[in-house]
Image (cartoon, rainbow, N blue to C red; front, side, top):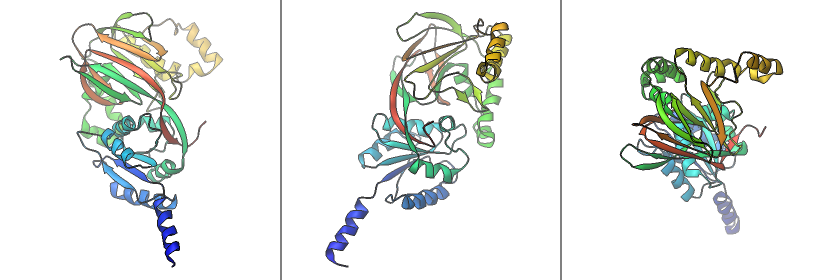
Length: 338
């Protein structure tokens, strides 16, 4: 081969796009994942992947920044919602596309984007060749009981109250065996011991609300496992965050909340007849669950501190939190743009 031809071959190799794979080493099937990604990367014309492990201290944000500094063209997050969230925090507003290979139990973000959660090869192909969709990111500023402040990122849903208590009491071994159904077990244990707390909150610069609540949820999307539509109309790319305030007075109130999210939101609200049934049965007048939507929400605990969770991971206790939406801050590879 002539010298010029060798140089052209070397230049072509250097011109191949680069991909970084940020993965949680505690997940099963990493060896198979390596083989699958290496094969599909080659078929897609990418250079040999850069593999970066997450750690307990840093579940992905620092690794995403490392990938950006390495000049990659694509980042793949392989793990659960926590890994995806942390990688997204490092890619926020960078314009770099994120591919997702779900390896967690809930995989709520992937599910809401129709990314395959039980087919790793399909998810890998999608990560390399899917459509690029710009989605919103929620930025969170929290204050701890000792006055310290922290900044976090959410892609799915965060909460202050019983949902966080439920997540903190989830049995990790049961979670490994049955996945998200372990949260049901934790909920049955947490609910009887739960007590409402007093909070002051407002969406955007609107009216201050003083309420006794069981939990306040701030969401980027509306669906939970089991096809439950917790927050109707929530969209990942509408430039808005959605707030759900749960304030049941007793166990009957919890039954009304369950009927709301499992029946009214998911079934009745989808048809004219169903909406008439909601009106006739007084569904719109009930206040066990109250919704609002905006670009920001501020929450302050009146007394003491409450447990806090982000995207299904416990984050200790807080005395206040402010959520703001960062529109179209993350580019994700998805099956379609419909």
